[in-house]
Length: 82
Image (cartoon, rainbow, N blue to C red; front, side):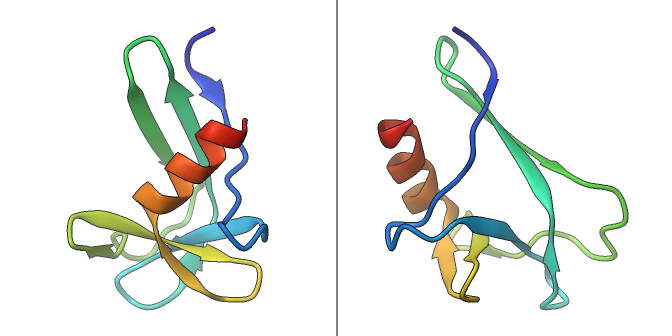
C-alpha cells in the first residue's frame, strides 16, 4: 500500500480540522502518506490567503476544540493508529 489519504486525529482523540496559517486563520487540507517511500504530503484546499504557519520546522495543526498541535505529533499518532 502506498500514498494513502489518512484522517488525522489528535492525541486527545479529537479530529484535526485544519492547518493554521501565518495570518492566524485555519485552512482545510488533505493529508497523504506513502508508507513505502516514507513521504508525507499536505495538500491545501483552494483559497488559502496566507502561508502555513511553521513552528520549529513543523506545521501547526488544529483539532476540533481549537487546540494547536505540532504536525509531527499528529502524524505519528495517526499513522500508528491507522
